[in-house]
Structures are given as C-alpha cells and as structure tokens.
Image 1 (cartoon, helix red, strand yellow):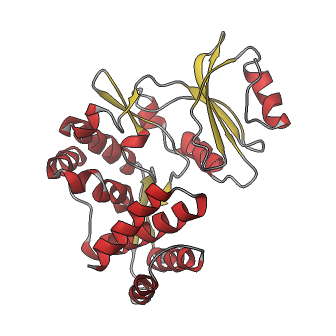
Image 2: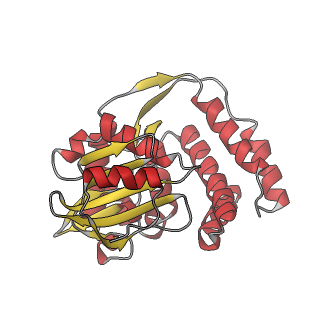
Length: 280
C-alpha cells in the first residue's frame, strides 16, 4: 500500500524498518508540516510514523525527547517507545499507544484525569533542573518577535503588550526543567481510566510553569476542581506570580500570531481572548 505524505528518503527509511507496513489511519492535522500516520506492520505490530516537512523543527525536538527525557514515562507505559529514527530524513517510528484522546471525551471533565496528569508531569519535571540567568530576556525577545509578525491583535492591545514586555526584568535566575511544551488534553490519551501521553515535538528545557499555561487558559478556567486535582497530583503549585504573568502574556501573543499565520481562526480567537483578559 502507498504511504502518503513522505519524501523519497523517508520512504526508503520506512522500507528498511517496516517494508510491509499498511496504513491504518492518517492523524495529520494539515496545519503544520508534520505527517502522523498509524500503520500496521507484521513485525512491529501497530506503530505511529511521524514525518517532518522541509521547514519542520518538531521532529528533531521529539527525537531528542525520546533519547533524553521520556524513559520515566516509557518504562511505565505512559509514553510510546521509540522503535526507529532517521534524524536527517525527519522521520521516526514509535509503538502505538492505546487509548482515546482526552480532548472531547468525558475524561476531559474528570478530576482524576488531571490528578494523573499532575503526577506524570511532576515525575517528568523532577528528572533534571539547571539554572538560567537569561530566560527572562529570551522570553521578552520571543514575545516581541511574535508581535513583529503579521497578526490581527488590536493596535492598542499590541502597543500595551509591547510596553509591558519592555518592563520585564532582564536579570534573575530561573530554573529550567524538561517540559512537554503542549501539556493539555489534546495530547493526552485515556485507556481504561489510565492517562497516557503523546506528541513531544515541543519538548525542551523551560521553567516548569510553562506546562501549566495552556491548562490555565482552558480547563482550569472552566472548572476550578480540575486545577485543584492537577495540583494535588503535581504536589505543589510552581507558579511564581511574576514569571507566571510573563509566561501567560508570551503564550497569549504566540497563540494569536501563530494561529493567524496558519489560518486556524478558532485557535486565534483563543489567543485574542486571552490577551483581552490579561490586559483587563
């Protein structure tokens, strides 16, 4: 069977790893240059194949995550095992994880889902920590860089955001830990009550609070019991007021500008609403 969305080099790698693999389902979003395919292979069984396009940067980060950070989750069956990778071809293959996406499932409203997610994230964050003296400066540069791109943020709001970002401290030590980078129900699976984790294309060393930003604007905002359950699982609340505010502002700007750039209007509105709330 022809496998869609692959370059010649990627097809050659797949032919070496799983020459008789058959397509089961195409999970690609279509908004970014990442092809995500569920395949069935006589040797490996059900697998997930991820392929990056020419401008894709997610596959390299996902591969680094598998090599450096995911073992605590893989050992307990909470994250997929890496089976093969060709970094130059931007291709990797992992074992298929069973489960339904939490997003849109009744599990998205269950506090126990968030308790488990908090426990899993605490385990991930606790692997490693290193100090950074330039994180605040990097965060400000990123926020201002987003605002230089095409967007539909109201001019007065954009001016207010620039003014705020320019007041952020440049100095100050911040602890960086392994973060998922897109920690929310659309990247969680639930299987017979057990939460499992997918999509590591944004994994990197960042402050721990970065992994709470998307939950805060979505699930925590609609149901405080979900936030309480998550923090119970995590074991503490890592949100320092100053860094938390800067993280939320940067996240809101990035969401609105990125979503506009890829034509995802509903997601753009999420960012715009968040900006409106933050600016009061």
